[in-house]
Image (cartoon, rainbow, N blue to C red; front, side, top):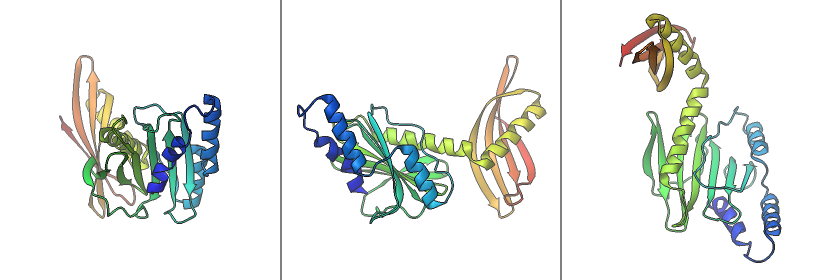
Length: 258
């Protein structure tokens, strides 16, 4: 894994300043990346989804707050490394602007027990693990959601503007996105909005998904906070939707005003 993280940096350092025009340097850089086996991100994602046969791979939708000039992807499905989706964001003249995303099938990621991790809460049911190496090495954050394990990494150096808080923010926004596109979440969120609007005779102007709990083999619940408005009146309501997880049959809805 570490050799893939530093590959882009090695290629960037191989472009000596003043060795040619900016255009020539960019062409050389792109050629070296493509020669390393890189593809477009779309092609890489499609290739890995076909290779793993486990359905869609939902990617984070947020990026670190730095500038990138190139983005590449590769489905690492052969060789000595664990099969995974590998995506790199790079700046052709700023090695510190480097961000790396790897996605592995859950339970089949790299063995990182030799690193000293710090636990980082991502949300109420997702725990991340953060590692910061020595100066001019790397930092990384890893977490698992659903079928996939995600590993976010970047250069760790004084001139870099990518920090732990940015990797954590990416992970949190990713989890929110995954939950919003989860079929169960979408189904019971729609039920909560419809039934709460009917009960109170008010418009639902916003809502927050608060998580899922499995109460027993035959009972699960999804909890939401909804904001209602009618005229000048506005308030929040906690809505708990309980259902049978196997049959998807609605069992009950519990309302509690905030």
